[in-house]
Length: 161
Image: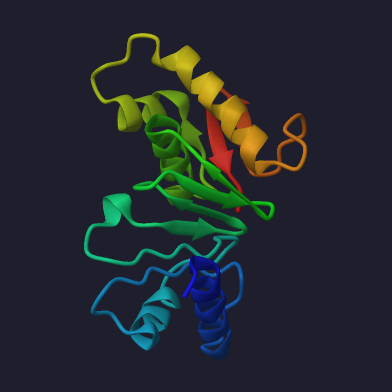
């Protein structure tokens, strides 16, 4: 079974459980879909896309937000009907943005989470990675719809699913 077929099957199951595309979903091994749906209805359900985690090790688990799918372990990115390879650091940047979907992530927070203590040159490198990720994800990278730059007091990014 391909990943696309598995995701289609999961989306069909979510619809049967009464979820909309803007609900949030976290599914781990050992948690039934029904239990995950019940828990999701306890939280805030405004404009948060479906995010799916599978497996025990969540750091490298594939995730999907809207029409963007990323497997950080293999570097596989699917968006706009294409499949591309993404190097580990840009994949880590995208992973953080996807985990924080529809939330502002300050540039310095993103650098801390991806580069840790090694920050030399990270700010310029982050700009390059964002540019490259937009080229892979966006229909028109000059008018991004998914990876938005936010400038309000401090600069950061917002991933819209």
